[in-house]
Image (cartoon, rainbow, N blue to C red; front, side, top):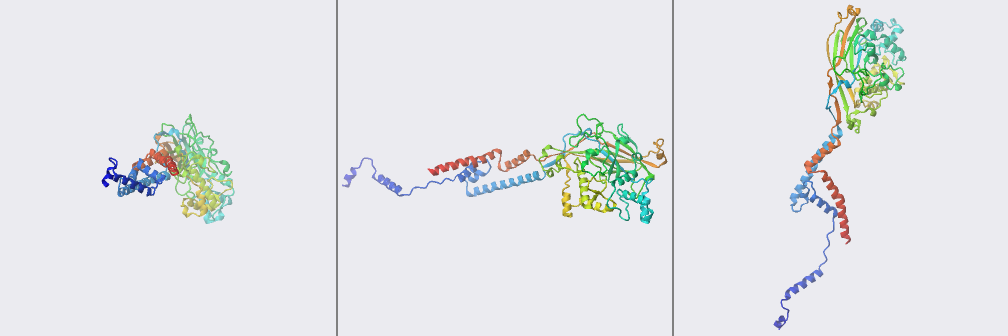
Length: 544
């Protein structure tokens, strides 16, 4: 019977296979449906970026064909490269941020024709002429018997103490100069005149009277050649009406920043030396031994010489050289010019260590230089400390002039300016902070190499000046000239410009990571446009 039923099945039909298919269908119907994979756009996007990026090492971290040890090793290498890269870039940034300026020599040399001849200020060590006022005798009389000195001589003596460092009034003297005009008149009357000091002057066709003007300095009344006039140097409207300005009437066509205008000749002002070099300036000076005094200024006799920028007041307390009696000093001058690139203007002044003219206002001076700023700062600080300033310092309408009784206070005020800020009180710190006397971005200074030789005019000038022949007036000579026709200036410029900084950082990142500009585009693409598309695509899948 079984055989009969088996014969009834269709040809080629496998009954066992049919049964297996039915079982599979029943199992599939009973199994729960599989959950669809949840989209993870951020994770998937990051994995795709690391697999495809051109940055070195990232694809090895994301490659699942690598073992876990290998992927961890590559992760450590990539992180180390990024860390080293960041350290080097930080060093470049610190160097660029702290000192973005480099001072280097200019590419080409300049002719001395383009700059002024230095202003020359000379001061005789003879302050009061002994033949007019016997300062030494009055000094000893005051110490021995004060009643011997008349009120007029005492007033003259106290006026001279404004200049005399080695003498003093046993009673101290007045602390404030009440009659400034009278004191100035006394100093002028006792000071050697132009005719007393100069025998001859050699500069083009000018004589001594045309070349030199009186200037009030720390050393008293001196003579200055080639300095700007008071109207061009000072803000006269801010000065005390009795402040004795520098003399001079020349109108200047020169500025520190722009130099001389085109077409200016050797006759311009401030005067400039001929471009071919050589001896340009020579004076013969005289000292009358009958007027010598060793009590007022000490035993040193002769002259003090200072070569300076025509736009600056002379500072006879520093950077001067001496001209002894019966000697000639020859000064070979080398200009020191510093210019600043316009590309540094967007940096703060303390980053580039200089001020452009429009950035720093001085109350007393129209032209900003470091020397003028320091002089104004000294005046303000001394006025704050002592309630007055020395006679030679520019000062405002409400400021008094210190008398000999304030000499120690003035000295202490000067010393405070040289102290570190930690040694000052709060008021002084605030006052000195306002000084802020950086260099000018365009700076002109003069360095001099001085040589000396014995100078004797006894025979040479016997016929023209009998005082020389008799030995009453002793000669000294001064020669000033440019050492070279050409000079090389200094220039402040950017150590790292924006392009230089980018190139440095790009080179470091390219070396350690294979980074390029297209790498930036790639990162922006993957984490903006590509990520947006993935999020949108995943949202569509979830909705379905």
